[in-house]
Every structure is written in structure tokens, then in C-alpha cells.
Image (cartoon, rainbow, N blue to C red; front, side, top):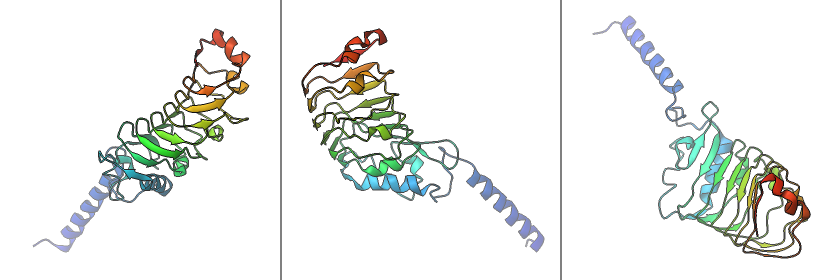
Length: 233
């Protein structure tokens, strides 16, 4: 039979071992089931609620019993507090709506929901200042081009091709000046191409073919050959 002193020593060793285990990371996640960042957690859960069909079970492990950094399609920062950097769910036949809560993922730099069946309008992402890559092509998104893309002030590439967007470019589209690649091919856009696009100094590729655009191509775009433009209408 162990003495009280030995029992106390054993209990202390077990406590130290447990603390060390919980301070270690496995796949960038603390061993505790407690979610360290409730904002990112609730943003993802709200997005999940917007999914009406998930035929491949892509979101089958999206449960609060598992840290969200371990969920399918999610990549997080490597240090605490773990923040969502990537939401990467292309080609999974997901149906539903893209929720505005994704704008609360303030560390998100990649959003890839391409090749699914998302419908409805694309939401305003109010706080997505870190977003660099936005791919929602090959879905069934409707409505007009969102005029709040300027909120995504770090955006480099965006692809809205092969959707059902309608209407003209907003008068003040507010595209971030950082943009390198813009693709709105194969929608139902009409009206003219705004001069503002030609003033994007970093733009290298502009793809607007298979729409109903009219009028003249802005001179700034025609003269952009010196920047190695890939311009397709």
C-alpha cells in the first residue's frame, strides 16, 4: 500500500503530464475540446447551417466535439489563438447559400467554394480585410456583382465565372487596387465595362467573355498591353 507522500507525488506527476499534453498541439489544435476562438467557430457553424445538401459528407466532422481547425476544408494559423486562414471546399456538390458570417473570419486569406451548387446572392464580407484569394466559380450564384468587394482590401485573385450574375457593374465598383486576376466570364452581365478596371495598376488578367456587355472597351484597358495584360471579352 502506497504512503500518502507517494500518492501525492504520483498525483503531481499525473497533473504535470496532463498539462504538458494540453500544451502540445496535434494538427495545430489543443487537446482540449474547448474552442479557443468563438468568433471563428460561430462563423463556421453559421456557414454550415446554410448548407442544405452535402452528398459527399464533406462536413461530416464539423462538430463542436472536434476543434474547428481539424474540420474538413479548414486550415488555421499555427499559433494560439488558432484562427481560420483557409476555407477550401471545392468540387464537393455542396448546395445552399454562402453566408455573410464568413466575413467574420478576419484571418481568412483563401476562400475556395468553386465547383459546387451554391445559389442566392454573394454576401457582403464586412471584415475580410486579409482575404487574398476568392474562388466561387462554377456555382449558381445570382444577383448583381457585389459592390462591397472593396471591403476585401487585400484581394489578389477573384473568380466569379460560370454563375448566373446579372446586371451591370456598379458605378463605383471599388475593386481593391491589389487585384491581379478578375474573372466574370459566362454570366449574364450587361452594360459597359467601368473605366475603373483599367486603372488597377497590378491587374494582369481580366476575363469577361460570354456576357452581354456593350459599349467601348475603356482606353486604359486597351493601352494596358505594356503590363502584359491577358484581356478576354
